[in-house]
Image (cartoon, rainbow, N blue to C red; front, top):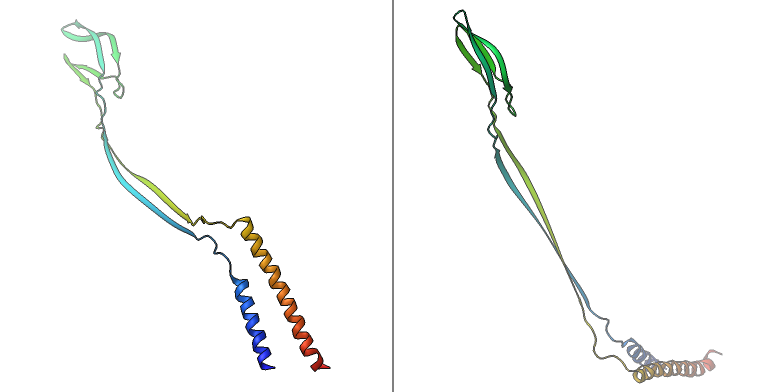
Length: 165
């Protein structure tokens, strides 16, 4: 009885080994590389103010030995300058034209982000595929294996049935 049990276990082990044989699945490797580069640059500049001028034209006259402003012909302001201030005191002409100091200095930061992603996927391709006839043989072997298992179980059942009754 132990010899029959050992034979049965050995047969079952052989059947499991035969069933477990299969071709490997394709190997798929995936590599991801992500690189983020941040570049910060400091910029500065000086803005130049274009030159500017204003003008004033007038006629002068002499009355009783004193110079008098007779007629203003033209008074032109500039882009940023206003029309000049004109004063006439004791035969002295004063023209004032003021432009406040203008200095423009600017700086700023620019940030440049460069994101590089590399993705590598490697798939192993099989060159040797099974033919139709090889697939038929594999399926026929499976059917034969199932039939052998059925016959073996039937044989074991016939041997142990009389012992149970």
